[in-house]
Image 1 (cartoon, helix red, strand yellow):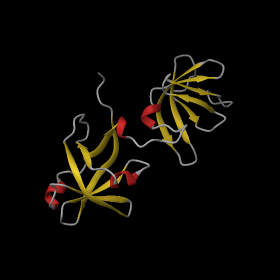
Image 2: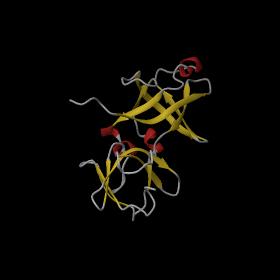
Image 3: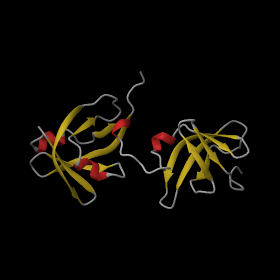
Length: 178
């Protein structure tokens, strides 16, 4: 049985008020999910096992953050102990994405293959630029002198994404490997 893959959906950045509320910066495209959750799973940074599971008593938006009230955390000092912790879910708890969309963690490690059959390399990161995402690809030996190849995620370049098979089909733009 493979170990549980935990995905970060938020980070505790501070406290709010004197009743033990915490400020959370969401790391999800679906911040409203917190208002539907019964509890949150907290992790210390660089730990694979939960610090604890805390039932949610309530939550609201405040500027760029969420304010959450956790059961059993009733003072500033108790809330302060949680600063820096990460809120995580497992893959089964992710919000469903529309067809053709993928979570970044699902793309890391996929092999990029060109329409000519060339095995370009492996996706190591996804840059979110605003206009379009960019795949950072570590090229296979002999493909290029570059240490990384940047592939713009636009319809005529990224033709197919198949996480089940572990591949992304791309049509290279002229000069991309120079």
